[in-house]
Image 1: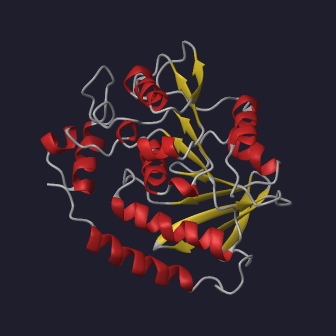
Image 2: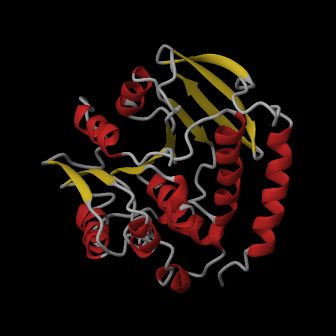
Length: 279
């Protein structure tokens, strides 16, 4: 059965808020980031606890006007060409480690605390760009559907858009038996309920389209893990029926599960040109 989630989310939100309240002064909207300092790609990285999870923020040398930021759904540091290019342009990069939770309601409550902390206490933009890499697509579309006013753009990097394709493996993709069982456990669903689940990115596009959120996906036409035609193409068709547009960059003939671009210029240019402003 599916969660009766409202009381759970309320309790988690209260707990998460209490956790983050200890790490910065709420009266200082541009407070310095707390935690351990290190280096990532030549930039200062802060690692701290927020919403009872490990959080990472990478700070640019000089913040661009409005403090724009890239918010990764999963896999911090993987295929980082876009992250690095945006950092060089004055963007922050942020990540809250809720690994292997598939964008669950519990995770979305923790994300809400992280968002409030970065925008309220540290003055980052109210409309981050969301990066959904692979299963991270589940996170960013869940957030965008629930908070369309808090998203500037969605960048999907070979994103999962339908759990029956991956991890379910019910189409032509190979799926992942272990992740399929984990998904059912995280959401407290039987397999028939998981197959009928309507929280997929392809199912939650209406509020995203209503907010006119720009979307760009980079995919491979030979992806055998998250097949393009079972994921991105379904999402693209549905989003465009709703009046939106999905910019598509297709990597031809690249097998397995390809990510990003070695030269991220087309992605970065699209983000810089199309990101929604805060107001």
